[in-house]
Amino acid sequence: MNRRPLIAGNWKMYLTGAEAVRLAQAVAATSGACLDRDVMVAPAFTALAKVCEAVRDTPLQVAAQNVAWGKEGAYTGEISPIMLADLGVRLAIVGHSERRQIFGERDAMINRRLLGALAGDLQPVLCVGETLEEREADHTFSVLEQQMRQCLQGVAKGEMRQMILAYEPVWAIGTGKTATKEQAQEVHAFLRRFLAEAYEKSVADEVRILYGGSVKPENIDSLMAQSDIDGALVGGAALNAESFDRIIRFQ
Ligand code: PGA
Image 1 (cartoon, rainbow, N blue to C red):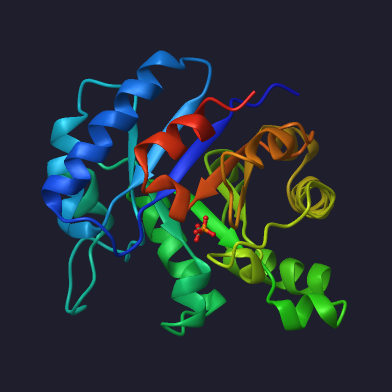
Image 2: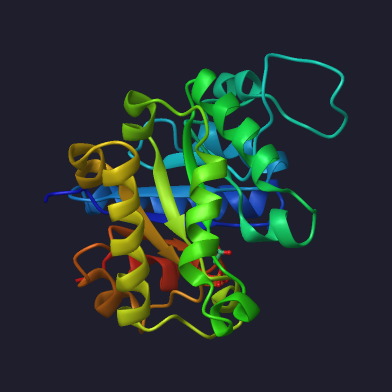
């Protein structure tokens, strides 16, 4: 199955506007030179407008790190999909483990955000992943199945085709511990089977599933060689133009 690879950088709560624009311009130059793959960056909300403006005429895609739902409303601290689309943002990460672990977001809320993104014409990047405790108790697959079921409630087949999934084992994020390529491939294959059962095989074949968790220049090639790994969601190593450049140029 020919799925177009996607390398995505999640900049988290790093970089002021000028710093973000500088990095985005460097990434856009690399992405312009690698036309057989998609490249995305997710700046902090405060840098989104400037970054969108700076890379408007390049293939680099810009995502938000989270999104609310609806057009507008009394939701202090939140940003609507329409506000993001207005800036030129095309994608939104939802359900990142830091949202879940630190800010208490649960599957039901992530589902609302995801439906909000779809309704607002933003492509959602849904993150799922188990904690170390869950993996050690042998609950990895039941936890993932539960997250998928609850986060995807009400998502129709046609909408599912527009989504991107990211498997991010919580124990591998920012810890320097990467899942082995075998561990990652096993979960990616499981998620694809889930999509085939919940939707249909053609959906499972189309949806890109990214791996995230301590992706680095040293491990990207072997991860991308796995048949069900279609890209990477990169945190720390995406903040450095050189290391992200090498990750985008995976072989
Ligand atoms: P990391 O973060 O690459 O720094 O582990 C990945 C992520 O949180 O998306």
